[in-house]
Amino acid sequence: MSARKYWVGFSVVKGIGPVRFRALQQHFGDLELAWNAPEADLLAAGLTRPAAASLVETRRSVDLDRLMDDVDALGATVLTLDDPDYPVLLGELPDAPPVLYVKGTLLDVDRWAVAFVGTRRASAYGRDMTYQLVTPLVNAGITIVSGLALGIDATAHKAALDAGGRTIAVLGCGIDTIYPPEHRHLAAAIMDNGALVTQFAPGTPPDAKNFPVRNRTISGMALGVVVVEAPQSSGALLTADCAADQGRDVFAVAGNATSKGSLGANQLIQAGAKLVISAEDIMEELNLTRSTVETSTQLREIAPADPTEAALVDLLAGEPVHIDHLCRASGLTITEVSSALAIMELKGLVRRLEGMTYTLARGRGDTYRLD
Image (tube, rainbow, N blue to C red; front, side, top):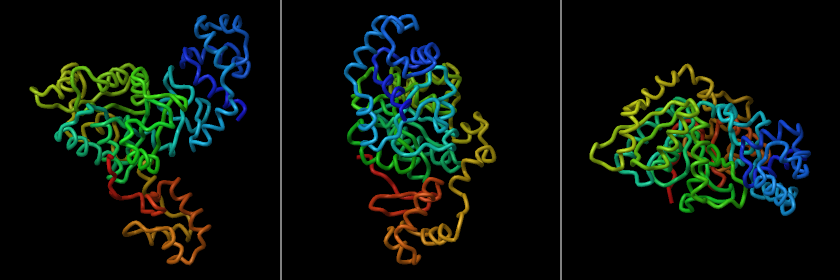
């Protein structure tokens, strides 16, 4: 924990990104030494004078212990590049964010992920195609990554949730801010069935300059990026560029040739992006047969570990059930049921809905509003 606070400290220093952070880590061999180093030593380590001055000013003004307390108070988890739970695909990149703030749960199965991006002004066609592509992918055990934005992003998250799957939203602001605010209900559902993730420290507003950085993290967490609908100049195309730069596969859904909202996606196809007609196109290109993602599918198909879990699975076989009813019907105490459900949720066997109601993780589950 004492070392972790220095990781967090560097995440709030302006002018020190992943590359400079790694240079400091290499030079000093210890983050506490790097954090407390004199400005001359920071310059010798390769920092520019403005970046070194920014670090000196930040450590004067920021109480790291209080910052960690603030993160804890938000119910967020801090993952560093040294943590085994740090996303595998993202961690392989040379410019991977040193720190991620997470609300919800990241699982090993999330390495089987596909990102969906597109315009904020999605058409009925774009929304329908997103559902048609996301649903079979989720049924095959694939996690859906997107950016919680209006339009295609929100539709991709919602489609994953409606199919009973996992989804991850990458934010362009601090973990304490939901942007856009009208997606607070959607964000809550994502936390229950995946995670909110950001590399920006708490208190960071959703400034425009953050979103290209956020886009690079979206593509970095996925095996490939699908652009469903995008005009000629859009963040979705920037994400596709990031994906190509990271060695990820880029896919695009063809749209009406006369539609400005599809011009960017159509041009991606002209430039060599894989044309997508069905989810099978994505799975074949990524070599994600159902046998390949068997380990991720097992997350939802895993057998109950003991009689308590088996009894709860039987009780949850139909409609969602409140925890009080599970206690009465099973004859177990609230402590026994709560403990079992917590473990089953981590294993992906059950999902927690609103109001302490639970359902099996398999199947379509309930639907989620976008407001």
